Length: 485
Image (cartoon, rainbow, N blue to C red; front, side, top):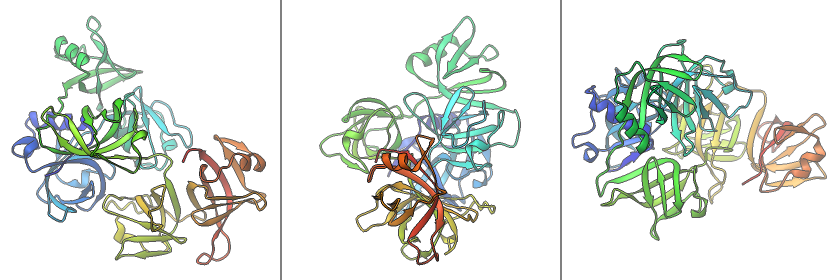
């Protein structure tokens, strides 16, 4: 049995739901039952999470404490809790319950700027990255003040929210929701804070002692409200959220930000203490990259002290991902690879699928990809030993007249004003625009700061010559967006 835990806020909400007697039930025996998988939805059509495709035909479904009829109420990118079993093949299973609990639902405070990497909602900063999926809008800058959005994702040590999905709601006003840690409790005024948001609990029947205890222990609470004035939320209901207890010998996979870091051998993720030792293997990164607020995935076993002893640790990088946005040249259905201008992209069980085209097919999958499909593919920064890139997210887009790439510069030729990227020649023109540190620069300054094997660039342009035999891109624009490899 494998139990995966991604988000303590979500776990606590799931336990609260069960305690309130809804239709959702944890497998018999609780954490020691069939198993609990937690993670972002990677594809629909059944539900695919953590690389396993679950049959949901007999499952019950809960969204924010309310029963829903089918999986149609769920969208790609949302972090869910799924109770069920996995088959011997390791890639299929059967779900008995699926639970979703958002972190935040409320109005946008200020219109985000073009290419913004965050949005403010009820005093909380919500960050987005290259894997964040947006539902109901295309760019974060499309949001307007007072638009209501629902956020699913992860929380770091600074209580900043990192969104795995953001859904724009059609309704204006309605019920607002926030989960977080109680701080700055003022008993006489009957207020406390979650981040920069003041919670007025004068209309709620809840004991001061329980809130004091929650503040002392750093316990999460859930606040529901329908009245928001500036940064003051008048609570209509407050619930204390309890963390799950993991039994010794439980096998666990947990994903999240490191929120306490004593050393590479001792740190916390999602409120769970993690210990590494000489038997721990490190994947997709090296041990000395571990630090506070690093997104990490850990597999291991709970010991008798309720501590997770790690068998393996993976570093998860979601910002400045390598990306190819162009027409697909060829699809290998047998090996599940895509050919994009000679670059082979390998999809796997963990690849996230999303349709951003006008079709908005909720069940878009690898089988829907054909040659000439225009795709935005986010891949691992470094290719595998045999030269393939591993697809993290595959999105179908509406056809564009240009193509764009993001990646680390592989070569530079100052004499010709070209550089290499994805085994292609990037050719600058008299009309090319250049950006560095988000500021316009001229050609000379751009090539002065451009570093081979270091500079992470974003380019947009046109294929030179015929599509199938071209190995060069005529650049309309190029920007250095990161200088660390």
